[in-house]
Amino acid sequence: MLYTEGLIRSTEGPFTWTGSGFSRLETALRVAENAGMARPLRSLTQVRTVVVRRRHRTWMLSMICATLGWGVWWMALALRRWAPDWAPSLDAAGWLAGAIAVFGLLVAIWTIRAKAAWLLITLVPLFANASLLAMPMLVESLRAR
Image (cartoon, rainbow, N blue to C red):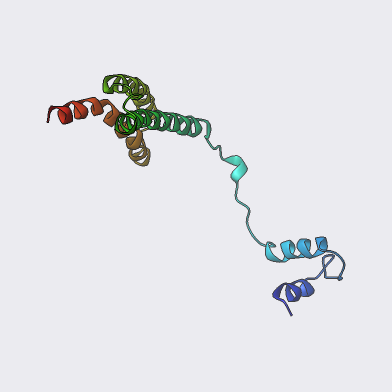
């Protein structure tokens, strides 16, 4: 005998097991399991999801900008290595990636919230976009060698 069969057969009242259909089975289970349970007052609390969603969207936008900027750099370096005729100059790649990074950095600064966990999460796009801005200096120092 299954646990639920014994539970349903032991219930009294209009929801006893009669052997017909699953709807009575589910109703009897709900009555038997949740008879004395207190209900949370979730409808009385106000959840602020608008600000959180906006912060998440701006975080995603700043990460997209960082990804695009790094894509510009890696594409320029790959083309320079394997197809030098098609490769853009590193200065052009730096300017394009830098413009994307400045926009991404501004959006990442706009994302900052005064909570410790959110500050840690916001550091990812901040460092990703800031490192894009530092990339031309790294390229110049590597060229000088």
